[in-house]
Image (tube, rainbow, N blue to C red; front, side, top):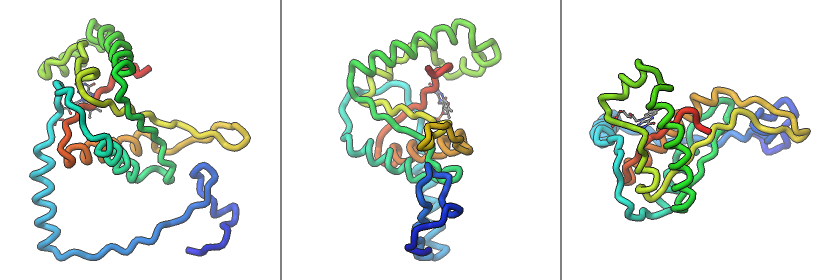
Length: 192
Ligand SMILES: Cc1cc2nc3c(=O)[nH]c(=O)nc-3n(C[C@H](O)[C@H](O)[C@H](O)COP(=O)(O)O)c2cc1C
């Protein structure tokens, strides 16, 4: 890695910013230690559950911010980090999001999903009522950035957006779980 200004060929597609690899010198850990860590983590992760009813008790905002910061360490296609996480705590905004989501969900559960999809959901007992959106103390809304805007205003493509954001959300769920918080992935369809 050099400290000199990179030539245009060295500029990453990451929004035109110079690509600066970070030094990486982790300590090697002994096999027995790795086995013990892996076994403990496996048990801990097996305790995670999707939860659909929430206590409205407040949670420390810094825990949520740290979990989002963990998610943002995720790898991403061409290191473009094509995500935006929005933490929503305001009750009125959550009420409006719930209203919009329930509107879409009602159409979905009333038939838009099709019988095969509805049959797959039936064992879970979910329906169009999404009380968690106003009960839970916070929502984290995850947006994909399918493109970025170059300096000339033209749209530039992001690569592997679904995969990158999926990995980041997995890391978000892991961070929330390991911080002692329950979470639910909610994917209203369509997601307007
Ligand atoms: C991509 C994705 C979308 C999901 N969408 C919803 C959803 O809209 N509503 C819901 O109640 N659960 C949703 N879930 C939660 C799954 O139903 C849940 O993860 C699954 O039943 C397994 O349960 P577990 O997470 O406790 O292991 C979603 C999960 C994933 C990964």
